[in-house]
Image (cartoon, helix red, strand yellow):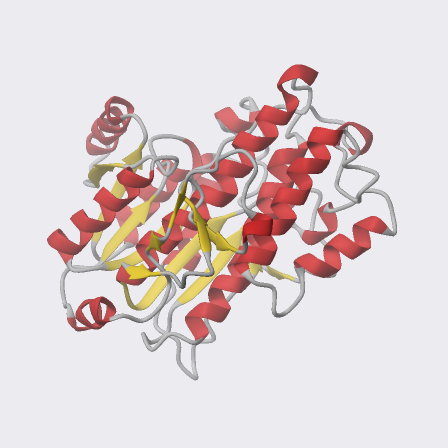
Amino acid sequence: MVLLPSNCACDHTHGLYSSPSIRVSFRRQQFQRVSLTIFTPECQKIMSSAGTRVAVVTGSNKGIGYAAVMELCAKFDGTVYLTSRDEGRGRKAMEELEKLGLHPSYHQLDIDDESSVLKLRDFLVDTHGGLDVLVNNAAIIFPMMTPKEEFVESIRKTIDTNFYHTMRACKILFPILRPHARVVHLTSDDGHLLKISGREPEAVALRQRFCAPDLTEPELCQLMEEFIEAAKNGDYYERGWPDSVKEREDTWPNEGYIVSKVGISALTRIHQRQFDQDPREDLTVNCVHPGYVVTDATYQKGEKTIQEGAEAACWLAMQPPSSSANNVPKGAYVWHDKQLVDWVNGPLPSIY
């Protein structure tokens, strides 16, 4: 833990440190101590630890996260943690995997609860000495046709969990990553930059801000807050943000999910820049679109099984150490067929 400079503010819920002008509008409890993604004496201890390799998959009691645990249990040389908000559901998922001859470990984790993430971090350090693979799968989704009186709150909740709380979990867990660690953020085809497709020229101005090569976390959070404010005012399309009703034929997701996943894709690029400056060797982070997968989130519609949806994420999670003979993806936007896609200009390889 490190003390932030006195001129910084940090939101207790989001772990957002920034100037007061971009503090979030819907959670105002402030604090000034937060785990940062920087090299500290604690990181030196992690670097020298030689425990069993460890992988954690967030939100993995069902769906793509569950399938990722299955794949990692079968192929990853180490301990794999299935995590869930609800311990009962997590334990039930564990029993199902045990029947298949797989043997994951379990730890409760709710990324919406900072104390839960801190408990996991402390447990991993005490038990294993560090972390080698982190698959950030936990997310929520609301349908496009969310009732008007619930729309803004659905936007807030979606951005909160999918973006802010994923970012906070990373701030807490990144300092315990060991050299050659692999981080995978689950994004979506809706997380491609071209999905910022509201009225022009406002949309292109937003896209230029999202893809700025020197974009910072506070600046990215500012974009999230501007979208929430536009949703509240009802003029988000006019400000350049996507409008699902005008653009889509399906019934999900709503605009909050789209913007939250664009935020995660942009955050991936920021995280890789941070890793590139980190003394720990060969840290990589990528984001992956799993495809149109049959899950609860898609109302059991889709073209892929959960096992197929987890393939690219697990491929990224198990990338071997970088070398002249192995060019490991870094900071990339990856399609479900393992194709690296230009996040800024596209084109997208397929509809889904």
